[in-house]
Length: 338
Ligand code: SF4
Ligand code: MG
Image 1 (tube, rainbow, N blue to C red):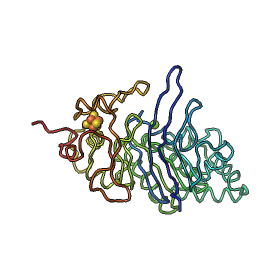
Image 2 (cartoon, helix red, strand yellow):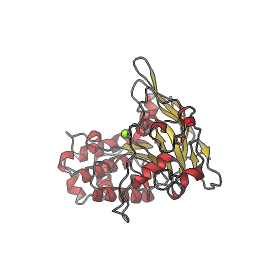
Image 3 (cartoon, rainbow, N blue to C red):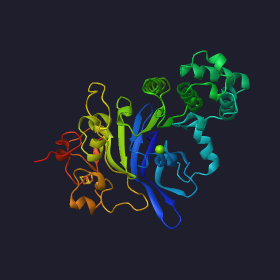
Image 4 (cartoon, rainbow, N blue to C red):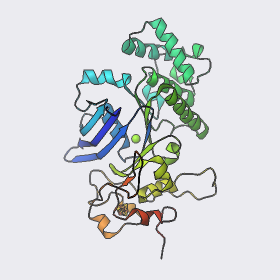
């Protein structure tokens, strides 16, 4: 049988004025019902373009290559009609800012019942009942009354819940969440993440969670893909990646995650800027910022390869010229000085 979602060698390129920008290169993964995949990287690493390609929502000068199969059906190149039916029904997306996804001029009731009337051919009355039930599922208190409010009448966290409820109305198989908690304070962030976990076990939804913060996906994902400069740096089971990170960029990201048990530890950001995607460096994209970079790193692109001795459904893979053991022996995000 087919995996629920199977992505192979996904690429995204943009035709700019006089050049081609390769925003995403060679991403592959499988996702099953009820599983969560974390797509992690700084802004500009290609994570948003990756999921926009999955949803068929790239800007007009963007072109996707490779394969995206849902239950074995190829989505890349699908005409607009079938693609629209798929979106919302089988794959839905939530965004960082709920206001961009909600219509400010319509009540929540009207927005939710419209989705159900269109996608699930419900009557307005049945749709209202269903919408209230979904607002209750995302734990909006007094849902039967608040469904008649407008988006601006909700707090940021409550608005995020409304957006999640809207996305789940058609019971999608795959929910894509693009930094859904970034704009929220830490307490509300934690509430939304635990809500997503509960909804996932209730509805069996597969989730692709996009974030720049490895801390956000720590307790949430089975698999993680770490992106940099539009390429996979490290990928595999979340448990292995957190226990034995073996790529310098992953080490850097982990050093930037605040830890509850170690509040005094200084936060180390990764110095420097992500690469200019219109003129990527010839070798490893991370080389200009990597504390372990060597001459060969500036010359040849390291290929993604499995780390020896890894056995899990998602064996750890990494793209780095240094061997995994050397990087794992670093303290923090840095090589030891001799
Ligand atoms: Fe650093 Fe070189 Fe590995 Fe790139 S290939 S991450 S520059 S050590
Ligand atoms: Mg983004």
